[in-house]
Amino acid sequence: MQLILSLCSGIGLLDRAFKEAGFCVVSEGDIILGNHHDIRLFKGIKGKIYGVIGGTPCPDFSPLKRDRPVLKDLYGYEMLLEFKRIVLECDPSWFLLENVAGVPNVKIDGYSHQRIDINQSWYENVTRLRHIQFGHKENKYLQIERKNVTDQSQKLESCALANDSRSFRELCRLQGLEDDFDLKSFNVQGKKRAVGNGVPLSIGRVLAKAVTDLDEKICVCGCGRIVTHRGGYYDYSCRKRAQRNKNKFAVTDQQQIGA
Image 1 (tube, rainbow, N blue to C red):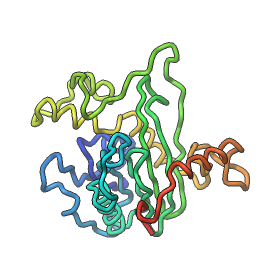
Image 2: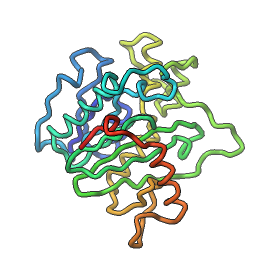
Image 3: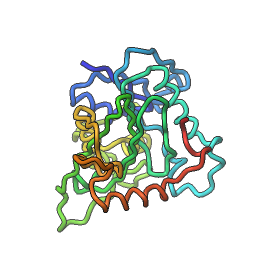
């Protein structure tokens, strides 16, 4: 059984999806469980870990945050650096980082870099866009399975959010959790915040499956389709999409985590 290290785990929704896929997941924990789970205190051990997963804090990179300090002063940026440090210390075969679209590139020496979007609405009648960065030592890539299972006759439900006004039980349903799921040591607002910040189980399961079915050549635009010819794009529309994304996610040297 392959061992995976989870960083900034929250309440472990992404961990649960990888466990269901047959991985052995060990979690460093999350600061919401106490300061002793601060990843700045964690030291990795080389040669023991197959993969590293995590969802570092995202509020600093949200488009809703207008008054933000310079990048190097952001707590979210510091956590990205810590994520990178631990990957380098553990030296796993691959890493997977979940965040929002505004997060800087996280490039790590010795690993490929794939940056893709995934939406909960591809699998359920709930819309939630998440952003994934994936790196692999052998230049392998995630092929994200995209389904059209949403009911077009129904309005998509809003996803669970950390500051959601809906009930805790409703947020659990939106995240794919069982009816009796609870966080007994949290107050009501803490429960809602913890669940709302998690990765929906439907997305986590797709990501875990993609890790088990890694491909060596997929379209570089991030659509997830396998490329069978010599070019890097599946078709012309993918080439155009990649150019739009390049402009959208253009970052300066200071905004990029990596070499």
